[in-house]
Length: 256
Image 1 (cartoon, rainbow, N blue to C red):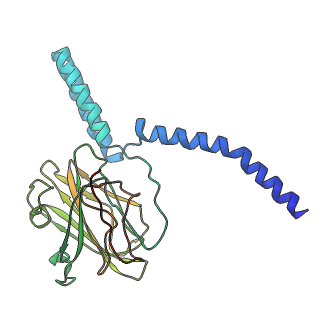
Image 2: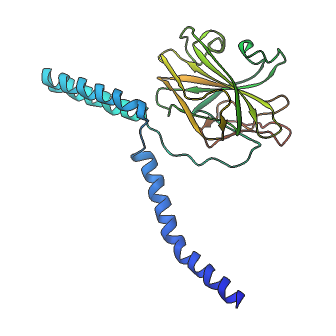
Image 3: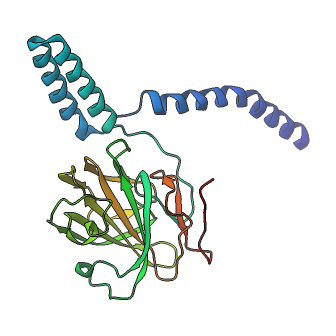
């Protein structure tokens, strides 16, 4: 009787599988063609559309340029769903973009976490990347420090020291290790949004902020943790595993 019940359940799952796969494929297609838009972006889309209308009244060719600009603003603020790997030991990329540097550096002095160098992974976001930021690990936010600064090109190393930035420190659920991530404004970016508060309980992949327009994210890994990404690699916020705190050793890569 139990075997018959189990078989019936398996048959039901098999019948549902094609329908579920079709729905997932549809969602995947919509994710890139018709993504969600961050609520902060609608006012910019509205302003761009109004500007396009004004340009169109002046000149049809200018109106076309205005609507292209509006489409870009819409594109910039896209907020697609992400599938986050589950595991307290994972450090997930907090930003979309290019890993442009992996260096040894002490945590930002403003966080008062000592001067011992740890691995710092820097992710550069171009103006074409998704700019929604996500929490890199599950744990508790312990410190927030906002620092006004300059607006050098975010791909430069000095951006970590001189640019406007939001510092975030947390204790991870895995081993209660210190993890730091930093939102850094860039050459074009002029606004950092961070919705976190000290004491917040967070989960990896959780959306927490936004940087407008073009920027950088630095991730200071816990002591002794090696990265599982390499320079030149494109990473996806909320999906790409930057590091696994449960394993030893980093990862190497080559252009192919």
